[in-house]
Amino acid sequence: MEFPNVGVIGAGTIGTEVAQCLAQAGHRVVLVDVETGILDRARSAIGENLRYASLFDAGVREASHAGILSRIDCTTDYGLLADIDLVVDNSTESRPIKEEVFTRLDRICPPDRILAANTSAISITRLAGATRRPDRVIGVHFMNPVFRKPVVEVVKGWHTSDATVEAVQGFLGGLGKRGVVTNDMPGFVSNRVLMLAINEAISVVHDRVATPADVDEIFVKCLAHEMGPLATADLIGLDTVLRTLDVLNESYGDGRFRACPLLRQMVDAGLRGRKSGKGFFDYSGQQGLRWT
Ligand SMILES: NC(=O)c1ccc[n+]([C@@H]2O[C@H](COP(=O)([O-])OP(=O)(O)OC[C@H]3O[C@@H](n4cnc5c(N)ncnc54)[C@H](O)[C@@H]3O)[C@@H](O)[C@H]2O)c1
Image 1 (spheres, rainbow, N blue to C red):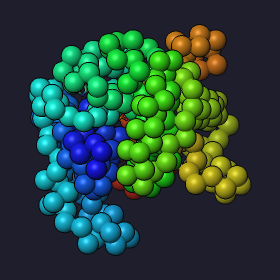
Image 2: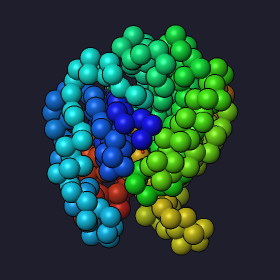
Image 3: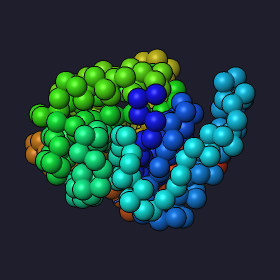
């Protein structure tokens, strides 16, 4: 295995899944977050995910769950990344937070190591500018849920070298995934398009044109999408959707990406989607929220 030891920064919605996917593929993982409580929750979420996946995946059923979990070291200490072979950052979708993370990783990790960013929209070129190794900084945009998605959006920053792209393709291949390589512009391909659709779907609810359930049913039943835009937003996390729209709005500055006020209000009210139990849909009873 070319990258036996992988650092995963951020143990939130997606970082937890990335850590699990890597440990399942046999990598040793150092999972870093800012609080031990977050790391404890991530570890128990991985245990639950493995039990759930066992119901329909024979590979997971037959694997040792204790063995997978034992390959993940949870820590708040960045110092444990000093010998790591590659890092995948999944910290909060905020340019200042990620720039600080990349500057820190650049100081700690040996200069020949690749630093990969799992970001929804932040420019890879910009994050690379926070390091002294811009040729070894690359975007790896894993999609949610990570274990079910065979393709990863791989983003080539201005200075990312072909050798880095090739190494990351090999790394993803070991996870049973393939990278589709894009050039670097905020939002890349997926979120430059998807966030517009999600934001407009929220505006449709805000304007009382339709309920969340009806909006999503039209996408699923009429347009054969696997999920509607509002269930997708709940899965991503409404706070992350809002942060992503704010990054896109700031980056392009033409108002197309200005977040719908309803989204901002829901996040302010603590409705963050699946991660908080409620968003456009209620995950205790699977009932669509009603707007009166
Ligand atoms: N949620 C998704 O479906 C999804 C999919 C692909 C990519 N992403 C991207 O992945 C990143 C994480 O998204 P998320 O949804 O998991 O967010 P999240 O808010 O659920 O989790 C972010 C985590 O990063 C941690 N963090 C913040 N600052 C940190 C630091 N300095 N060091 C270590 N950890 C730190 C937070 O404590 C939190 O646990 C974002 O850039 C997001 O755009 C998200």
